[in-house]
Image 1 (cartoon, rainbow, N blue to C red):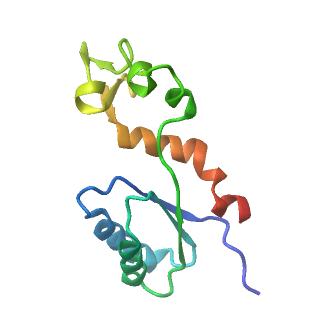
Image 2: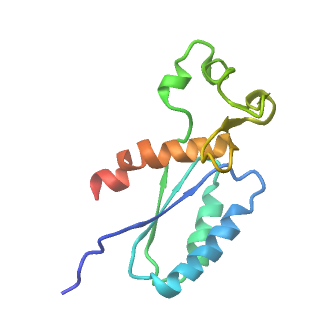
Image 3: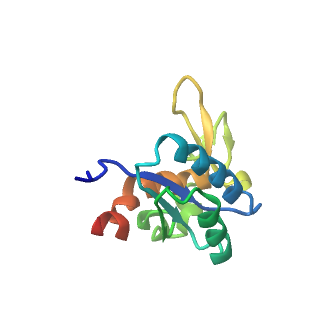
Length: 146
C-alpha cells in the first residue's frame, strides 16, 4: 500500500529580474531529489516567469521528483492597496524608519526593529513573500483541492 505524504515542499519563484533564480531553484531541487524525493514539490510562481523558463525548470530536475506549478499573484494586502494614496501613503513615516532614516521611497525597504538584536530593513520582495506564505498560500488551488 502506498502511503500519502504528510508534507509538501513549497517554493515561491518571483521577482526574477536577473533571470537567474530558475538556475538556483534547479540546483536546490536536484539536491532535494537526493534525500527528500518522496515528498511532492509545489512551485508557486508569479507571472514574471515565462512558460519557457518553467518548462526548462521542469526538465532540469530528476524525473522521480514530483513537481507541480501554480501561478499566483504576490503583492500587498488589500488593506494597503485600498488605503488612500496606496502603499506609499500607508508606509509613510513613522513607519519604515530605521536609525532615523526613511527607507521606503528610496529603497522600497521598510525599517523594522525585529528582531531586536539585529534591526534591519525588509525589502518589498520579502514583504510580498511573507504575505503570500502567511495569508495567501493556503487559498491556492493546490491547497484548496489537495
